[in-house]
Length: 331
Image 1 (tube, rainbow, N blue to C red):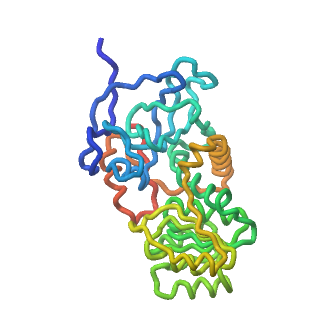
Image 2: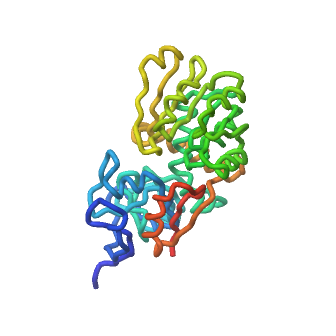
Image 3: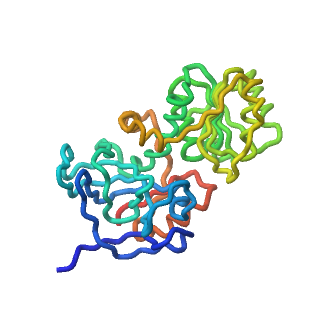
């Protein structure tokens, strides 16, 4: 009898999404300390397209199956793997390994987060990276306090919309900056006090009118041309949190500005948190799932595809004008 096989979206070389196709591959067997998940949902984001193309700073080894934000049911455990129940519904973030766009995937037992029964698998998957990053940025790296003001750039995106909710829930004054009316309206629904168009020439004037001065914290997953004017909008002692460069360009900042503002430019790398302090990451994920269940957090609206539509889902990551999080669910 031959080895069991499964469907997976894969490629023998990192490159354009058009090079990935659905194929039959061997079902993986868990090694010591690993479990095998029967995948129920995998969320996709910008980093997945970078990983698939070989454009991320850490490159996976082909053949590669994209998809890192995984929710599934434990169906097999490796040797000497304890404390994991067959049938448990769990989440796992597999940034480098990927593997989510398949029927089954392996995960280290230590990486598993229990998913509450009341939280749908697709919603849980959609929160793994965006909400972890937003929490880590605001509270661990930014030291946000109740009553402070927060400017969220790219507020209609995954990280931005998570940051809007988390900051508003903490008692901060949130100003959402987004490029389209629909995204600004969405940010207001999530708890922002006001929303501005950061592509407008006078957006900093709008920000000053709303706050009556500078902003305490900037959440910036955008980069590009907006970084310097946003940093210039900080109040004394402000913190500008750099989360990524969705604008496509990595900007520079005159070194005198942090001195003049007595302000800080702070990098935020959720991967570093996960690798250096996994217990902290687990506590954050558990808190996020609890808040989603009790209604304090709204997972992003979803655009669902089935595994059979995985090529279309991966290609859709290039369309940056949507409010929806792309999630692939089991057929």
